[in-house]
Amino acid sequence: MFLIYEYYIQEENFTYVRSIFENTEAFFEIFFSNKVQYSFLLSALIFVLFSFLLLLLYFFYLNKMKVSKYEDELENLNFKLNSIFENTSKELKNKNKEKRIFKVLKNREVKNTKKQFFSIANIILEVSKRNQDKLSLLLLDIDNLALVNTKYGEKMGDKLILNLAKKLEKHTRNSDILSRMQGGSFIVLLPYTGIEGAETIANELKNIIEAYTLKVNENANITYTISIGISAVKIFEDSEITSAITRVEKALFLAKKSGKNSIYINKD
Image (cartoon, rainbow, N blue to C red; front, side):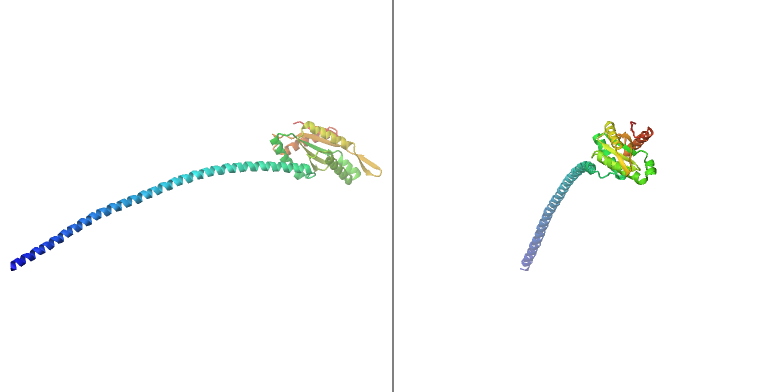
């Protein structure tokens, strides 16, 4: 009886132990099976994330290329706009210069002001170069002014100078620029005028002055004459008006040397 019981106990224990081993084996099978499955899922997830990251980098690269392309286009457009703006500004500047010139010509704002004469004359020279217009200079000087000052006094000499200024203002065109240079000398810039036209104007002025009588006092009147030098402004050679003034001064010197009350044209 005891042996039977002991055998039963042993058999039961063996069955229990075997069930434990079987359960353990099943556990490890499930564990390792799940581990493989989890590893596969983890690898798939990493692959998906890596692929998504590469896709993001690719789109970022494409966007960067597009932005770079747009930046280049914008830079080119900006360059073109700047060029257009500069050209437009130059055109407007030139137009404003011409408007200012014509305003000055109309209002004769620079008469008897030497500094302004040089400034405006150089602007007119630039415009004449661009439009290929003729341009001439007259330089007039009162003959024997020193003798008038000695005989009748400097006040009488000043009256001659003032009278000549008024005559020039009255008998020159609105487009002409007048200025007193020094003493009894006056300069006249003649826009749109060649040598022939300048000579015609000079002769008219000389005849007007020669025919005029100026009252000294109740008992005496005097007449006076002028000498005139003429020179063309070389619009494609003269960088500034001073070059033409040098030539017209030489012409006036030769007019005085030839006997006064005369006109000399410098054709150099």
